Image (cartoon, rainbow, N blue to C red):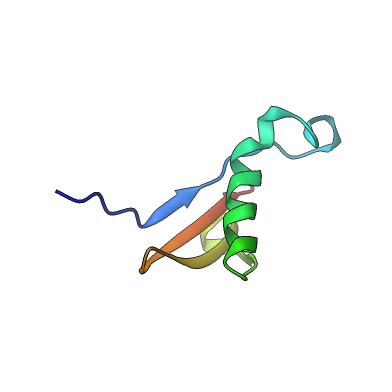
Length: 68
């Protein structure tokens, strides 16, 4: 059985207190995936965050950075 991933959520904490801390590791990870795939994030109010779409191993995957 092959695992299918449709969404990767990169958690992070807003604010200057957390800018360069481990609390943003999830957001950094999805940022790196987006950059590696030549795409960027766009604000998406219905998901309360920023959304990007990439192709990983031939499969479309959404990346989400929540702002809540």
